[in-house]
Image 1 (cartoon, rainbow, N blue to C red):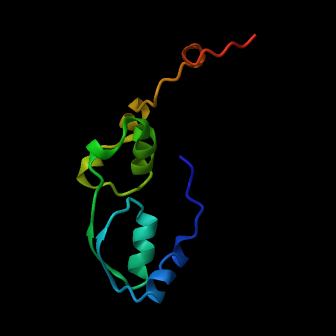
Image 2: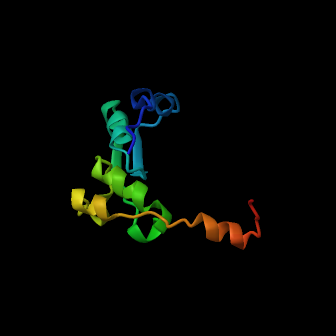
Length: 107
């Protein structure tokens, strides 16, 4: 995974501008976002985890890498370790089959 280069420390500023002092249900796996909001003085009551069944098969590589590198995914992903990261596979893609299905002829 690539390290997030966005500067999250400024992210809570619009929330403060709008008068937000408390977020009841925070739906984000990002600890960087969570820490920026909480450290700016906004209270987060509940961190909602994303259930595994709502993560599409195509997103397993991304979500596993993010959790391994520190994203908070709650209890559903607490068993992600280096071995689990290595076992995660993305979608198989066969270029030749795709060309045949679309009747594309390349000579």
